[in-house]
Image (cartoon, rainbow, N blue to C red; front, side, top):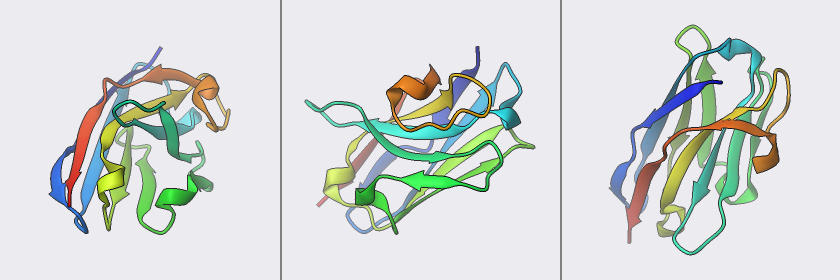
Length: 125
């Protein structure tokens, strides 16, 4: 089991930027894909982005492509989500996720083995 702790959420105006961080502990971080999901009020939790264990591959939901960037630092056991050009519709609780096993790609919630506690991102218009 891995423990995930997110930070970096907050309130920002539309067009602004935030960077979320997720620190992992408890197992070999570099062998596992990592990802970010979000859940807006009254909506299902949705996939936002993922990065492979090797860092070579990144994936994004269409609505954030070109605005969000996922990255990881395996030496620091940390994954990041840099969010630019934020829109009010990006408002949600953002959750860090670790894959359920080594070398598994994160495509949806079924691929997730561990979740962070979530961090609130609010974008005002």
